[in-house]
Image (tube, rainbow, N blue to C red):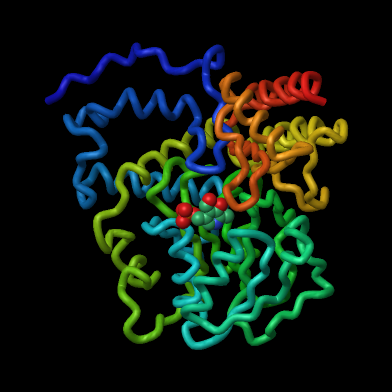
Length: 373
Ligand SMILES: Cc1ncc(COP(=O)(O)O)c(C=O)c1O
C-alpha cells in the first residue's frame, strides 16, 4: 500500500493565480485540481492511483456510474436518452452522427462559423446533406434568419453548432423545426446554462471546456433515433455497439472520465446549472459592457446571439492586438490570442473562470485603453 502524499503543497490561489482564458483545454475549477491531487497517489485507500485502475473493475465502474447519474441529474436527461462517454473528440462526432442517424438518407446543416464548417466537411464524406443556411457571407457575425433557411423536409435531422467557439456566436434557443430531430454540438457551452434535452435528438460535446480535460467525449442520444450504420462501418463508429458494451468497447479514457466526474460534483456544489448560468451571465455582461464602453474594443457579433462563453474582439490594428495579448500575459492573463484562423483577441469564460478573473481582465482592458487609446 502506498502512503498518500501530503496535501500541503500550495495550489495557485486567487492572489497569484494565472487567469487562463484559453478556449480549450481550459481552466479547471481550483477545488477540482486540489481534490485530484489529494487522491491521486492512492485512490480512496485502494493503494493505486486512478490512472492505473482496471477499467472493468469495481472502482472504475463506480466512477462511471456516478458520473452518468450526476450528469443525468444536472441536465435532467430523460430515461429514453442514452448517455455515452467516447473517444475521438467532438471531431469524430462529425462522422458518427450521420453514420448512425442518417445511414441511407440525408441531413440538414446550419453553418454559423468555423466548427459547423468542419462538421459539414466531414459529414459530406458519409452522407448526403443540405446546408440549410450559411452565415459566411456576413463574416459569421450572426445566425442567418430562419425565414431564409432552405431545409430538406426529408432530412433525418438538423445539425447546428450551439456555440461557435471561434466566432463567439451562440444559439440562445434551439431552432424550432417541428418534428425534425435536432443535433447540437454543445462542446463549448455544455452545462453553462439550462438546456431542455427533450428538444434534441442528439447532443455531443468533448470535455476540455466545461467537463474537465480532453480525451473523453459525451454523447446524449434519444435511443429510438439510432439506426444501423452502413455495412462495413467499424464498430468504434457504431453508437449501438458502444451502448451494448457499456462504453467499454475498448479501453476508455479512464482519467479524463474521472475528471469529468469531479467537475460534475463541483458543479452540483455550485448549485447546479441554473446557478452557474446566473454567474456566467454576470461574467459575460461584465466583459461585453467593457468591450462596448467605447470604440476602442470591437465585437461585431449581433448582440442577439453573442456567446456566453467565448468573446472575440479586436483593436484598431493587428499590432495593437498582439501588444494587448503580450502585455496581458505579463499581468498573468494568458491565452487571450484569437484563433489562428481569425486573429484578434478572444476571452473564453467557461464555468471554471471565477468572476474575479473576469474583473482582472476588465481592469487590464481599462488600463490598456488608457495607455493606448
Ligand atoms: C464547438 C466545437 N466543436 C468541435 C470542436 C472540436 O473538438 P475536439 O478537438 O475535441 O475534436 C471544438 C474544439 O474546440 C469546438 O469548440
